[in-house]
Length: 84
Ligand SMILES: [Zn+2]
Image (cartoon, rainbow, N blue to C red; front, top):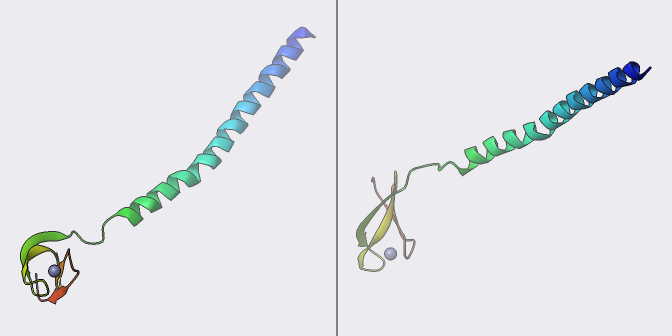
C-alpha cells in the first residue's frame, strides 16, 4: 500500500507541474504581446534632423527641426515652409 501512495503522490506532483506550466504560459503570453505593441508605439515616426539656421520670427540663428515640408524653430516653434 505504501508504493501505491508514492505513485499517487508522484502523479499529483506531475499534474500540478503541468498545470503550473500552462498557467504561467497563459499569464506571461499577454505581457509579451503588450511589450511588442509598446515598442511599436515608441518607434519614432520620422527621424528628426536638427540644424542651426535663420529664424524669421526671432531674427537670429537658432536650432531648427527639419521636416519634409519645412523647418520648425525649437525655441519659438515658428514653422517656415519649404523643402528640407
Ligand atoms: Zn525662433
